[in-house]
Image 1 (tube, rainbow, N blue to C red):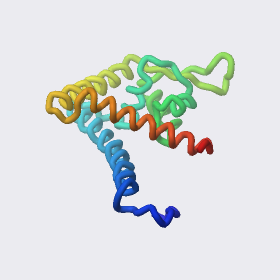
Image 2: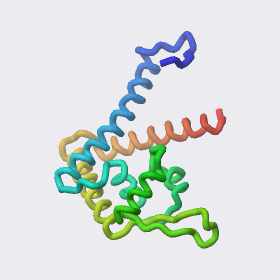
Image 3: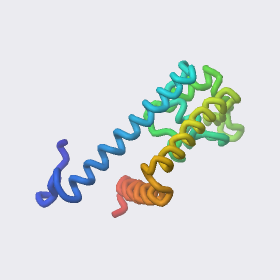
Length: 165
């Protein structure tokens, strides 16, 4: 890590250490989520679609969006959105249509095949939610607290990008 840190901020103890651990955990959890989705798809015999594409279909749901909106709405976190959209359209998971007003813009929505994939992911997440509570991994109040904290961090980071201190 080549970031310049103030002299009074340690990297292994106190708040800074916990912050760095949380950052690492968020990154690991995202990769683990993709692995969990991939394993579920292997289990049910869905092999032509990858976990990133499945998560994109899940996040779009019943919405009709432009490629640009996928990132601004938080539906897609990667850098190669055009590639994945093209693949999903080519494989029949999504419809695409040029916007009437701005012909450069393309709107996408799920096909029936795409909605089936979304349902596989939705069932997986429902099983996880039930298991997290029934095995006392996290309570409904605990998940609300985690979500609240993560939203505040997201807002803080977004403000940093916009140079709002």
